[in-house]
Length: 373
Length: 221
Image (cartoon, rainbow over all chains, first blue to last red; front, side, top):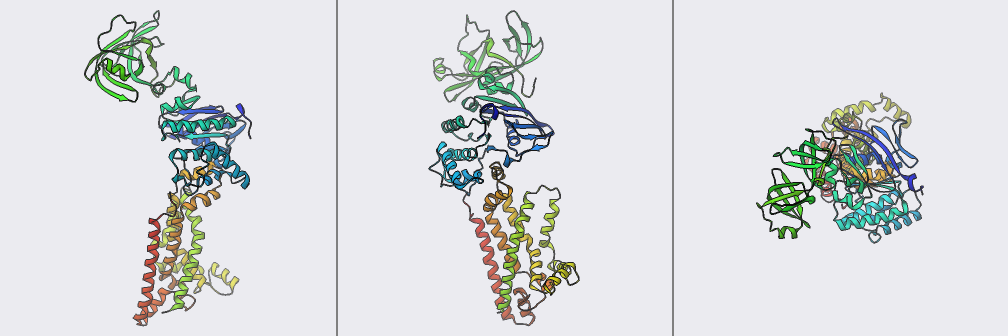
């Protein structure tokens, strides 16, 4: 229908004041394919989608898909939601409860002839594997099938852009990835930009080629999932990338020749060597450490290259799926991940004395939440 | 029993309920979905008949449709006779008097429809009209039926407005409640009792129906 490739990319800038203390102010661009929009609740994700769909009106900005302008505040252009050609899958799906799966799917095809409607409905139902459910009511199919119905209903109209507002969050991992595989397959033929909003960390890695991180109404980072996650510069990003430990500290001494800095944590004055940054001596810093990057020893280690060795005591041991989480009090509280096997061979018990081993480069300096450069 | 009075009441109530269904749907839609800041004034006007004495409403309707009023004159020039003390006059007064009984349950049902269904409909390219007929109305059917039934029942039972606007002309404006009043005035308690009992039974059945409907949703969610 419409041209493929970059001609169908989404490009927009949106400003919208939601309350005296909160405004959405983002530049958004998405090529064909799935872009994850990640942010904690209240970061403005849903408002962004609603502005793109024409359900909310931005205070200012411009939205275009390919050559087609959907919103442009200087010229007063504001294409209504019904004419935007933007598919929207709501968090609660919003399937019409009184209509069958078939009637839900073909609801958006009312301008077409009955033959075309039937053919398009059949084709999309097949793509999403719900062709055997067409005569049932949404209340009579499973959760995963409801999500498939909602996707089929949005996509059968052949939209230029698809917006998904956390529609799969309630599903188990396996069901979710099967549905996403079908969505990807559908999109190889159609090549439209798909924005997938989520606040679940694991979905970012599992689903997206590209990610855009929202924090407090602004874009914190965007790019390929790998690039954004490799070097998180901000605390929300670091949380997203799997960092569990965050500490306030101050720079004590810089060692440019060694490429390191000596820091002191605000809690208990724990000394920690971290990679060199632009921070000056005395400056406050925020340090992030992955729980999986900390080693545990049950006796004081000697002859190690690691620069940071802290003595502490195990407060609690918790099984979290395939890993064990040890909460260690070393003056400050540290979360450490280890395998059940390691936990057993160390004969680790609560209240045991342990040593934490942290490599300098496992300590990452981040900007605290809300602070933007 | 005064069968012509019963028949007239049923006819009046049916006509009024039909008109209120036609008028009540758009008014309820507007009251539910308009974002006009002075909307509450309109809501107050619609609710007025709930608190106003029927004689007050009847009096103003009588003045408004009287032979010297613009409405009355226009009607006379069209039909050759006046509006006051006619069946048509009764219909106008009853529509106004029963308006909130139709509009309020319908508006309540409209506001119960999940807003995301309405938004989903618009993102699927549906006009407001299509959204109304395909989504809002089917999901509000229960409230719409309740509104029509209540309007019908309320019109059957009215007295003061009919007396003010219709007078008491057998076959034209003499409704059941007036017939009961007449029987009592004539000290014919037996006749009054028969008609009153009928009205009581009817009202109970109607209300039981409305409440029964509410318990059993028409649409399985």
